[in-house]
Length: 317
Ligand code: CP
Ligand code: NVA
Image (cartoon, rainbow, N blue to C red; front, side, top):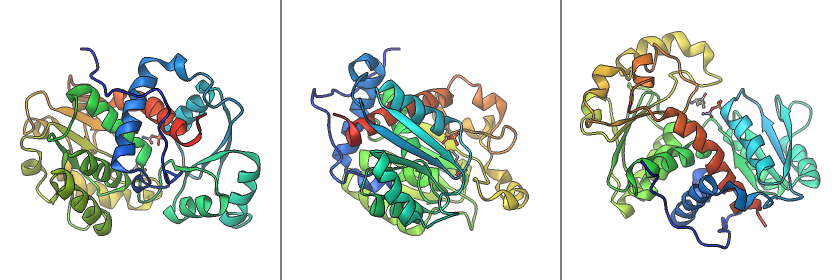
């Protein structure tokens, strides 16, 4: 099936805020342009081979990563730039403020995976160079961009489609909600009690949805929520940093497993989505991950293309 993509102009679009500390740093129009550019980058990677010529990017990782780290390294290099990588706590030996000001003297951009959202905000504030959030306690925008690109490839314009996120109201759920809302995609987050999405972020997404016609909702009943879904999304029950709660969460989240019975409540041919890494037998099962509707590796591939588009919009010549 040929991918249906958005048109793209010749000039590189820009992000007015100059930042991607969180999803809200991009306007709805900039998000559309990013997705259009990501589709073009995927189709014609050779067009962008030199766009980051002479540019260096610092990648900081306080937490483990496979997809994000490798796709950012590849993205920068395939765009003609280069990167340096630092793994470990960012502010162990000196405050973030000083780290940021050092990095900004050597490299033109920072990509950071952190525990606290405040760390990303401080890097941007003190560094005065574009900062990309590569996952924080509150957001995972790069994941959401790749997810929306994946939905667009499958459905064309996904406005009016229904995505149901089942599990923990976490960073991945937050970013997906904010971006679905801005594109007019309905989204329900189904969680156990006590694991609802952050109230402020939920409210922000809900209000954004009022402008575009997207219904942003929360539910406790996963099976009812999944009724009529075009895509069902899940993520690990215990995020990085919550390892001590893993056992308790396995008990609480057991009724929220995305298995074949739950998928049967969705529309026929519904997509199964997961940001990965996944724990087979917990939040989902092997059969669903390997099913015909599973787009998990498309999502992973699109991390590369969506992040290239983001880097082009922030740093490209
Ligand atoms: N989905 C995602 O961010 O994967 P990594 O943790 O491997 O980077
Ligand atoms: N919610 C997960 C996402 C991993 C990509 C975490 O923060 O660990």
